Length: 183
Image 1 (cartoon, rainbow, N blue to C red):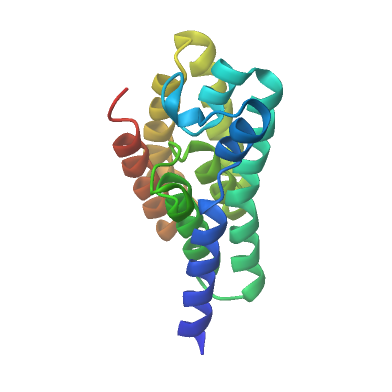
Image 2 (cartoon, helix red, strand yellow):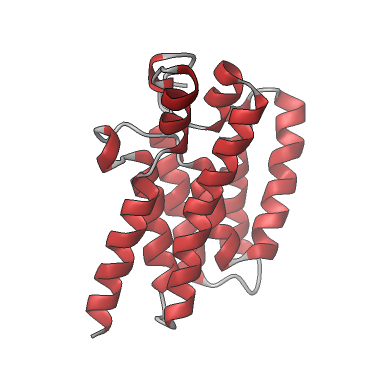
């Protein structure tokens, strides 16, 4: 029975992750596909650049929820790695959405939402590092990738961080580097 629950969590997480608020908002508000403008990406930073802070904030909130909600549902099932499975599927859905011809965002906000549910204190530390790096570098992609590299090292070194979580952070970091290869 647990296998069925995992399948449902993964399928549900992926489908929720595949919903793209930036594509919907850009089409409804301006009649454009955000992936044809700016950095050609369906994410928060491109929405901020192309459509302004209101649409950027809306995209950020919805993308964060796409990571938080499946991970919470996974936690509520009581399955040992339910939050990991559902959250990771949502992250993959965001990057490779079935509803948008598998051309999605960079996965940063959705991944952060997922990790926030699983280890909130750890993510708080990583976000503080990320914000500082963003102010220093003024380049979002550099600060994000640097933050996730540092977070990966910390996940393996800090006492009290479960090894499965450390490997999840490592997997997310690898995915983020793949999604940012054009940068």
